[in-house]
Image 1 (spheres, rainbow, N blue to C red):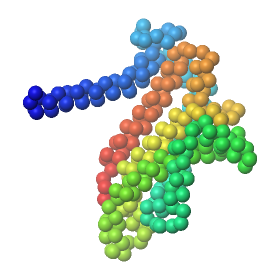
Image 2: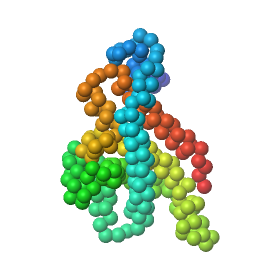
Image 3: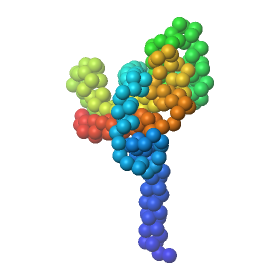
Image 4: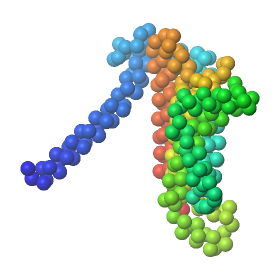
Length: 266
């Protein structure tokens, strides 16, 4: 077999494998979205018709709408807090040498290594000890713990790739450090910041395991409500709610891609 034939065979095989992976990843979401439009009362694929009946049912369900609002607020606040803390931490660990720097880095990334069940149980006990259990602040702190590692790791990688010559050039022109950070460093880090935002928002919005421990009374996030609903009944309403979650996640990623792609780098 000639070298050209081998290269062509490898390219064809690589393309087939890539499309097979795409199909395996997208097929469950496609089935869920298609099922959500069924007019019947049972989950069937392909659906026998087209109807918005179950989306209207979700809209009229105060339980799911309140949970959706809570999940969106919680994810937004967790993203903002983790971005502020993570940016400061990544900047400090990249620019300064101080005692226990490796320990601080390991501490910030440790939630990635701890099983979420163990982390949720430990956070629950800690929140009870400090008196923040069954509060929105406690729930926010829990989501901050699981989103912060993604922000720190993403921004730390962006810091390593940052061209500091532009910062030094601005400082040589007597630009104040705050202005250099605002006009040079932040624009250069913008793609990394957008990636960190996506990781944090999607992680918080779709979290189930930790939220099971920290939810309270009627403050229950949407993924947990979906889980408890599936345990009781199994109708197309679950598919409609899941489709809304998929839609929000895809829109978040799409907007982040557009923002990071359209932002000009100084």
